[in-house]
Length: 215
Image 1 (cartoon, rainbow, N blue to C red):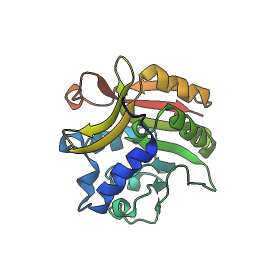
Image 2 (spheres, rainbow, N blue to C red; image 1 turned 90 degrees about the vertical axis):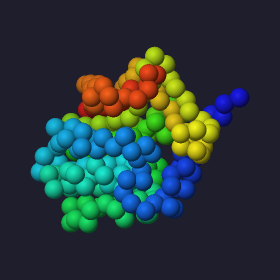
Image 3 (cartoon, rainbow, N blue to C red; image 1 turned 180 degrees about the vertical axis):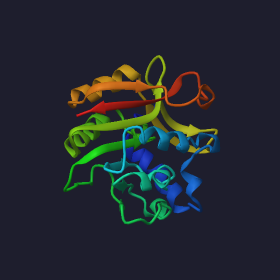
Image 4 (spheres, rainbow, N blue to C red; image 1 turned 45 degrees about the vertical axis):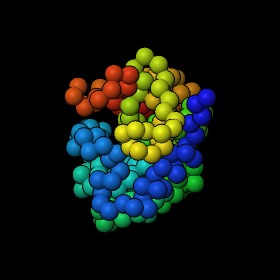
């Protein structure tokens, strides 16, 4: 019987990874998965020098480091200090070493970016995260969520990965399900973008998309 995926399992996976991190690329589980040039360019379609961004699951800052000098401010949220030490040191970049559930900001943001993170939460957990995000966004502000999603149905990975040689946990929800979760939490004007060239999608049953939704 497949174990139900929970975020605590994924956190353990990344805790172990952070403990042995030797460079910023460690967060890319497979080297061909570094699409952060595309990510930064996509984010800047919705941001400019007046935009304040909250980036959830910032990791080693591979994306943040490519866009910080084009926006007003970035709050980089990641629980693992051994990852965030690779994030650029800049007056407009604030690093917070907490989980999303531990975070309690005293401001609202123009844009929340959630890249490669929501697959590590199951459906119930994801709904709680989206509820929190909704309260952290200014009226009219946006959230961008990018990761792999199930092409025909939900795909749950919970157990040993031959490719990674360790236990790995992910919940790649179907697009309709993720749309419904966002709508249930109050988001509107949701658009789904096929963010990468076809060759970046390695598997037939999952596909990278970016959701853009408005408060």
